[in-house]
Length: 294
Image (cartoon, rainbow, N blue to C red; front, top):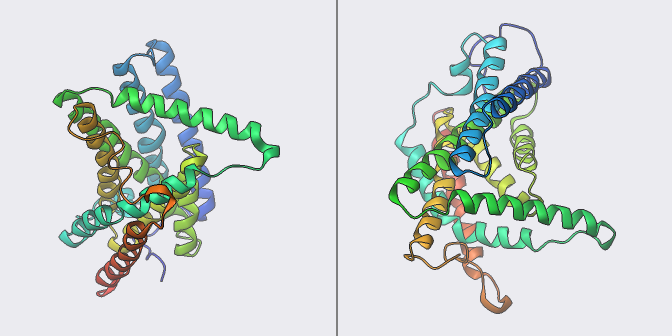
């Protein structure tokens, strides 16, 4: 069952050609973003400037290029992307329950992926990858290191909502919607999930991020509303923000949330297994609910 055509396209362009146009627009957006950073001499060592540069990148490289590319190809861009479709209470409830139930399973997958090693002949490449992961982690810690309530709200807005909004618009509202006009929907969802994970350039978190990307893609397909994966993405990011803030204030032990589902002393991850089974059952049930009227 493929995603139905919402409205007739302006131009007879295949999905891959539409994506190529989107990438060109995104590249131009990155150039504009880089120019602004240079002209205004934004220092990436300052926290306020980090947030500003991230917001500029999200808007100019993700949001604006996607809407412009869709508008170039279709008459009603917001409709095609699913931004004009309201969120149902079923969709919202599904997102919340699956997010909570899947935490132990996702923690185990994150831990497993992080423990992977490349063959000895690729040790130098692995070292570079590890260094990139450490640098990304340092930037994340710098952004989330504050303890005030105001900083918590700012982080939820930028790291949670803006990041979730921009990435879902680009990957699911843009690339996924464009390719679904030419290819099988299941294939497109997983392809976009792979691209979504790969573009973060974090190999040792590739698998869990890919699985999240696939989940967001299916949410869009089943609910027809881009706001559902946006909410799911925002919730996923915001849980990390809130947990980190609680740790910074001494209300939660460091990595307490990340360790849920991980067995001690290398034992069998029974909680993670139960979480994975429950998550799959919930997702299958959600699919039935969303598709029963279609």
